[in-house]
Image 1 (cartoon, rainbow, N blue to C red):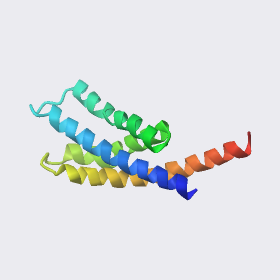
Image 2 (cartoon, rainbow, N blue to C red):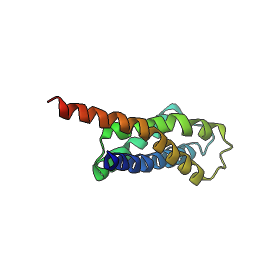
Image 3 (tube, rainbow, N blue to C red):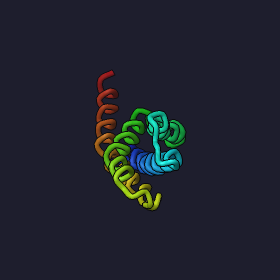
Image 4 (tube, helix red, strand yellow):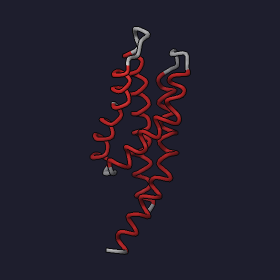
Length: 124
């Protein structure tokens, strides 16, 4: 179990940082003119999924698991400060929030995934 959870935590921490940095960077890039259109927001929301696809194959973690972690991390610790802040916050601060968000969300998702795999092995 611990090897599985280590892999989930590592991948989720990386994905959390990726999600935060890519989302906040794309929002800042698109809103240079102080106007963020709907399509620019959609592109910013979709952008973390590219990292999920890239890192899931490298770290041998399910794409669905990492998509869940990425978008839960985006909603809870990242979305509020990114729109409620002054816009002058350091991008590394968002990276740290993404890291912690990814680690927190990885715990219940990883435990649930472990027990579901275990049930599948016991009941073929």
